[in-house]
Length: 260
Image (cartoon, rainbow, N blue to C red; front, side, top):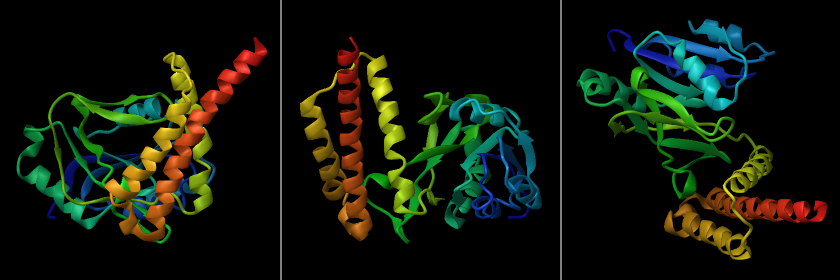
């Protein structure tokens, strides 16, 4: 690649010194700007980012959606690649992004998505609910913004056509089983609050059938069994997480009745 792409890489992070080197190395040298927005960071993230030529900003935490939008506004290029610190651009994805700029696609599309592949239990997960997990991350800043929930489950929204690129975005999200299990309760709480805000009610049928469906879909229909024990664990954990979500809704409703 003769010259850097007219592209800003935007990363929002907090105490990610362990992950940043891998992420930054995957984009260093072929993009015009790397911008790292840190919030309440107490480790060496800032120094590590500057070693890779990144511009470092300190931003107050406003939730995922609003903090990421604030970081996006600090970028200088018209196109941005939004990454998390535990992600890495694969060589194949890098080539696809370069081709996207070279063939004039930036005039026809306002965004591009690509599959995200998770490293879990010492293997790449290539089936089930976790893959391909298409992520919309390459965007025209003038036509795009982070939307969705303010604090969890933010998602990129684009005003115009998007295209799917080849090449995986590598995701090193869970180092251990414990780190994955720790996510079940926060997501269950979020589900409970969302359902109550929408007037949703606990259903025993849903609490029984939806976990069973999630396991069947992930393990059989999406061929999670091809990922060995990791695929079996993911299907079981997905079903159990679904069951916990509905159970939290039941618990909240019973608590409200008791208080009344």
